[in-house]
Image (cartoon, rainbow, N blue to C red; front, side, top):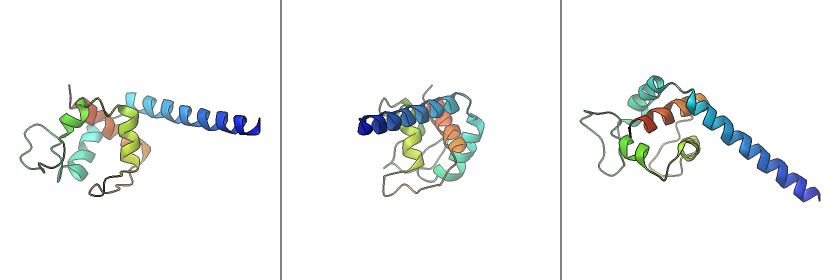
Length: 109
């Protein structure tokens, strides 16, 4: 019984976190996301139309934004704790992550 209550509480907390992440994404500042991308991501990723440099070993923001693999929540989770060895942990705030996710997702449109 206690285990069920604990699991239910954990599930509720995760659901609330996802709801907040999704809500932040809707109110996110894409312009700030673009500034973050240009500052921190453009050395490796092509983050904007017309960008002349970037690695051919990593996906462009247009590819990431259009990928079915990354919805807003999974992209935000990845950016909060990148698991790729070549991807630095930028220690972004939740608001900055929401802004960056909004910008990345806008690149696919």
